[in-house]
Image 1: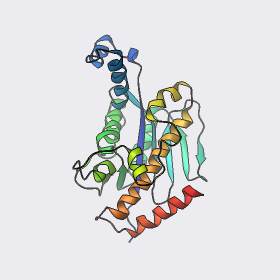
Image 2 (image 1 turned 45 degrees about the vertical axis):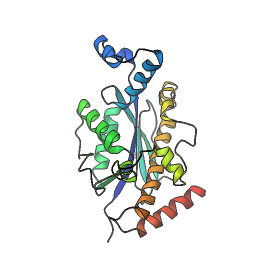
Image 3 (image 1 turned 90 degrees about the horizontal axis):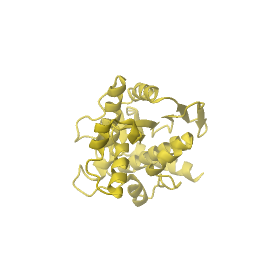
Length: 245
C-alpha cells in the first residue's frame, strides 16, 4: 500500500531594521546589551522571532518524487524552474508566500523538518496570524510522535535525551553534503537581500531542504520503527546517485 504523501520544508527569516521599531520597543530589544558585542548579538537574535522578523523564503520538497517549490522574496522576479523542472522558484511578497505555503502544505499528511517544532512551525503560524493569513493545519502537533510532524532534531536526540547538533553538523556526520558547502550561512542573508541577490537566498533555502530530506531518508531507513524501510532505502539510493551525476 502506498504511504501518504510527505513534504520537507524549511524557512529563512530576516529581521526588520532596529529603526523600524519605536523607542520603547528598541529599549526592550536591547535591554541586556551592555557592550557592542552584546548589542550585535541582540540584533542577530531579532532574526529568530516572528515579532521582529519576516519570512523571506520557504522551500518545500517531496522526498519521494524530488518535486518541490520555493516561495521567496524577490521584487520584480520571474517564476523559474530548476532541476529539470522538478523544482519551481516562485517570487512573491510575504503575505502571498504564506498563503501559498498553507495551501501547499495542506495536501501532505506528514511534514518533515529539522527543528521545525521549535522554530519553523511556530514562526510560520505566528507570522501568518500577524498578517491575517489563515493557517490550514497545526504545525506543532503532539510531540512524541513522528507520524504527523517528523522533526529530525527531536528524533536524532531522542526527544532531548542526547546532545543537540546543527543540521550542518548532522549532515557531515551522516556523510550528507552540507547545505553550507556553498559558503553561504544564515548570517549572510541580510547582505544577500541588501544586494538584491534574492535567488541565492532561495537556492540556499532549497539546499537546507534537500539535506533535510536526505537526512530523513537515512533516519527512516535505519532509526525509525514506525515505517517500512524499503521505500526510504530505495529513495536514498536514488538521491545519492543524482547528487553524483
